Length: 217
Image 1 (spheres, rainbow, N blue to C red):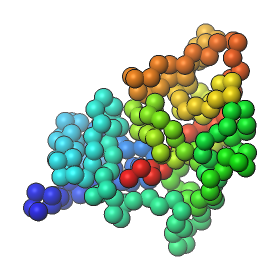
Image 2 (image 1 turned 60 degrees about the vertical axis):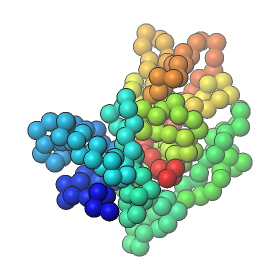
Image 3 (image 1 turned 135 degrees about the vertical axis):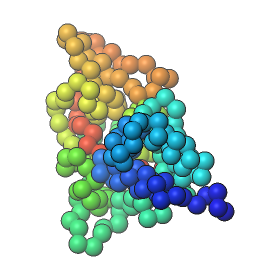
């Protein structure tokens, strides 16, 4: 089993990845790993990531700078359990929203699957609810089917932010792009086309993504 034993540097990188996911909801880029650990280039970080992948500790997704996922073998002590309160830490009790029925408010009681206790430190801003992600259109941003997206209610957003938006009666998670009066909702997966919101469609921003809890282990 010596081929699966981690070096000190590999353990350091694995812990760095876990901390980044816990803090922001997203894995670090190669450049961020290199900067954090003092490597001269992102290539050095890539070499260690490839070694971790060969040892079954992470999965690497091609075509995205944040395409790093912890595997079942790696989770152990770094696995996030959103329903478990940690001693001495204030817990946020957030509704978990499942499939949203057409035309119904997101926080309608019939959409609430459960109420989960989570650590406030996991998120960039205090969220109002967790939304269960459906589909792979935001894969390139590290958001995949089954993830719990932490959402802060908002009616406005800046270009480039990941938003929960309502188009007519449908709710979707995409990256917002507005210019010259034109609204586009951009996926992070080349297999999906951008959504162009024409003036004939009802459109509203429901919230901003402020973090992520990965449950698809």
